[in-house]
Length: 553
Image 1: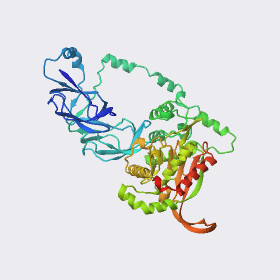
Image 2: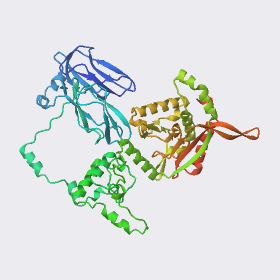
Image 3: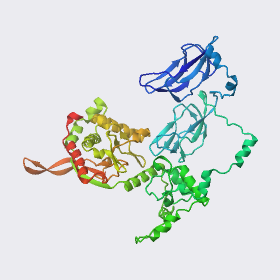
Image 4: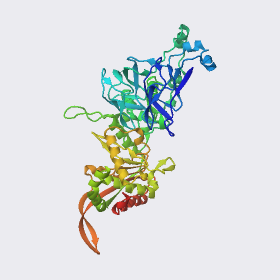
């Protein structure tokens, strides 16, 4: 008799589980209530016992696979004559003989390690460091390499225990998601068998050789207009992989701006740039000459510099000059900054804030909060709390521009810009920041900063931000003009708190006092936020900070 072993439901809100280890192999005898596998869920990790005594006849779900609750993960064959249902299961004997075995007993089996997908819109990743070499022993969940993507830099753990058998992608190489980057020789466990390709007969092979080129290739060869946009789109973001291909193939920036993207939001993918290069090299496309030829005829009075010349480096290595190639992070920052500059109409307003009340509160209570609650009080938490109050009062600063619509967000995900050594920047955000008090915000700021600097951020940590704060004052700067983090419409810059003489009125008489003062600078997108709205928003923050109430902490 066959008994289905299912993924158990470990709680009311648990809808799936991950099978992390099999304690038995196909063909093993199992006792009733003997542990046969382990699972991991959002709530708990636990061992699962056998529901019956018998033989483990089939394993359907493999180690490190996640399936929904009540999915059949294995079948146990119990002793006995069985039922009519059992006999009906055994009727199609021929089909069962042809079926691929569902499991492989591993003894040094190779496990493919792919480039992981770190977000819905992330299509590729760059390996920035290998922590293991070929021949090294690897434990389950041990960090084996680090990757950098458009969304986040993170460490990737091993999916199984074993020995590093092969490294296929080297450091600083960029590949698409799901590309196999390494192979691991396992010392045990259960893995999926690799499907063997069906052998084709001589007639099938001959037919395949004589098969004419697909229609898509003919279209490319005959003109390939479907590969080009009607007009160039400067300022688009291009991934390092696309830029590397363009550079190797001699594709100028002007040409690249005309390549039609089929990726997410019209983004140019590896497939798009390769299709363009193939069509151009085959003579099916003019190399952007139609647009470029008409350019000099414009009576602008300006000298037109060809794009290919604009992007040539001005320096050569040697004679006291060292050329250092930009890493993936630096390139992404560069493209995002240029894109923001070309998208938003930046306007910056500056105010000076008297931080006396907050300064004195931190000075008097800093040690107490660290000792009693493990919270480190900094100016950033108080500024964040004031910003959240201002966003509730002026929700147009918590919005984005969607073509001719204004997308006003009813939630506040507050971005905190974090400098990453040696030369990088990332903006994780505090989700539902409006639900936290000052202590909660202080904890979140410390948590995000530590995880950003140790590469422990997840893609969701840097997605769906609504407004950003950047604290350049931590490096001693008094004020600056920050660049808006797209697609937001505002960013607040926080300067250093410094003691300085200021004029204050005491009993109707002006006098000079020494006070801890701080500059705040608000860069806002003038397409949506006018000077009046920006000024009111900034003044509201100033008043909240200067009139700080200790009861809200």
